[in-house]
Image (cartoon, rainbow, N blue to C red; front, side, top):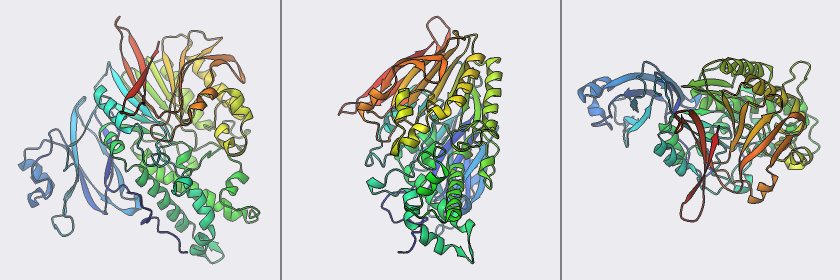
Length: 552
């Protein structure tokens, strides 16, 4: 059987063609990600007034002339040649915007030949597309948090996305954080949907034969082939109408977790990874296996950059050597500061600790976070939000450390609470508590991964004034962990492997899809406070339930 064409997969799943994502946005700038349906010269128009008139053909006029003739107040106009080299994606950097202002946008072709481009306005013609810049110094801040998008596992049920869109709109949310697992490339074979690593195992020989090059292989050809498969997952997973409406309107900050690469990436040994692509007793050709694993990793990195990270705040990226990439980043709005930890790009269970003792974060990222924490602890930020895609605390310690067998092994070894990760976790928490010992700031860890929800307060016996919390919200559309999983969520108490820290459970939920809305605002006495509303769909008539958590 010939290899499938990953750019034209016959699997009957509707794919994303043209799409927009509002990325990192400040009071004066925005990063806007666009995917076009076809190669060509496409123009992004940013306007202060709604676009109107003949947006299908623009009266056969050049774009700028049409906008002027229609009295549309254009704030910026930029063009780009979209090619397959980046899978028809590009991120526009828009500057010079006004604070707290609604802007309308559209993607338009400059092609005047109707036989080549019948509809010149590809995005923003059927309905207005718009976003809002941040206020100059917001005294109130509202943002959404979600993780684990996988409608495939739920037989097409899009889960809580319509509710999320409704609550973001109702609360006037400023932005959204996607806390990991925005796609699942590797877990839905039982739903008749391909698992990318199982596909590689089944088609390895055909792939190698196709890209054989003398006594070696065309590595660039293999990587591009695998990259196009990873790209296909994004296009299928993100073709959900309510998800797209959230992406088109509210600024998005994203980070990946393991399912954008491989379930448990970083928690597998070298031999474990080879097991994913070799059948039993086939490990004799380890060099070929190592090559394929490395090319899969590089392909996953490039797809992640193209679809997620490219519209985050810019960081140092080297896709030729992804191990050198910085995927973590920070941003700040008003008196709230955010740090997005990244737990996969440098996660290696077999890392030589003499060279780099930080198995999960890596030395460089740990130091960047440490420096950020020190700066914010002495700065004017009152609330600190740290995204850790895997929770600092969630499951009962005994489950994490004594149930890590068989298929669950990698899942539990991912956890900060696994004994192999205690040293790094303890160092991170010690930095957090020691920097916040004065008690004049509040830090909240935001996490996903576990397909349940929970909230804890963490305390340190030597820094009793520090205010540190952990909130986990997962999953927005992935089939949730069964209700019985509630019994596996810790009640709190002493933290295994750390004699200084203990916790109090404030809330737990299993068996339901969920998301959260955070609000920073003034309480009745005029003091600043932060709350989180955890929402989950319940009942047969579309009801939605809510639990509010107040972080003092």
